[in-house]
Length: 232
Length: 301
Image (cartoon, rainbow over all chains, first blue to last red; front, side, top):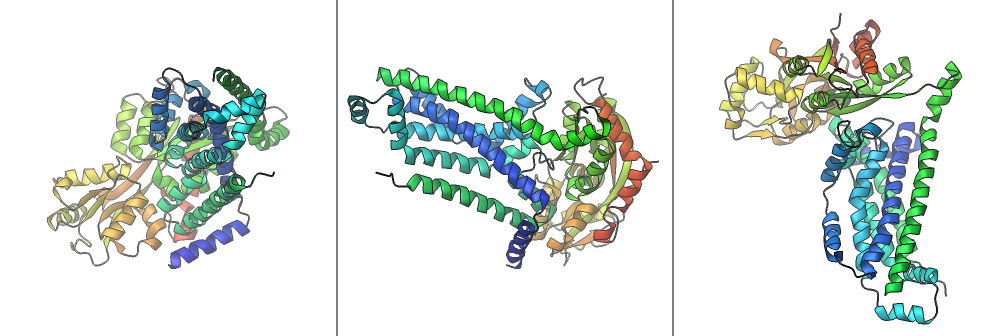
């Protein structure tokens, strides 16, 4: 019990003292996670829409693979990226291993299937009659897109939140491809692991507190956006 | 339906284009921002652009967990070599050596002399230099259920075995794990014969915490023990001071003749830095203020 109180006090102390290291780590965590989820969204949502609305050969197989990808263990994502980026690997010349870019790549690999899969399953439920009606009312293509996106807002934001949750919680792959390098690839989750192995439980609790607060604020904002009633 | 298809494809392309555009911007905007601090400072000093080169240091968790690298070595080295950016990858010694043999690292700081000699002999590493030592100790429960306190190291291990006391092994091919296996071998024992032998497969800190929770014995380096002691209320030192328990660290560079992508210039500088007089003195002072005793003893001549 003492330890938890100590940890919370330490968290308060670290945040109020404006510790530069903590600020850097937090900022990097946000930068990496946001970039990853942004790219996953921009790729995953359109692909999910196509897979949800269109019917073509091989679609079921693609869907099956995406659904498997939703459960891709992060360490396997990490190992895959590591092998690709090794100096002796196919992309070795770019020296990307142990950079924030490598962490972003691993995070995209784990979050893209989630965003794509959840988007496609929601678009599969769109009523054909609604599409016909939109067309009958003479909507242009762009208007149709906006109507569909608006109609699917709740499901899309749920997909993005699920992907974001995966990204910000990610530790195994980030440790492997990032290397937890001070000032470069040390993010909140990997520092928590390191502080625990150093025996600094108070710092670990403080960092967890920061991470949870961030996750809460972001998810809360997304939920608010999701639940906002449409202005009539 | 067909029209929707076409339209969706079109919008997908549009989004991809936006995405690619955004990525381009990101790279351009983010990269200079990251390096701008260093570069402006350096540019001001030398009045010309200095390229920062990465130097990958593969090392053991013990050097990171004690704070030696983050707090002392790396800042000091980068201050003296502004053109080099050290990337410390703290893993078990086994993995660090493997990174060396694959040419994934430029310089190694490890503590498993027998395995190190092998990779020097195979030509993967070169310029191996003695840096420092500390020592291993055996810690165990305060009530010492196996009664090993003060025994010589081999006898202590044998007693743990005969009493089937809990022994927590690193089990991760680290330098400490290799050392532990050496001790078992020297005592002529097979540790897995003991049903209470636990292989954690984790770092030293985690292994110590398991020993603390499970009333077990474990072999640890003194640095990690000192750093963690405050959390390990059930444990005490039971065996220490044996000549066999010396924990020796060497630095070496990955051989550029065998691995063409290594930064051999930077690696050579790092090796020189680790054994120069000033660094050695700083290593000897490290930890004195916090633990009342040094964590490492400099050995380079």
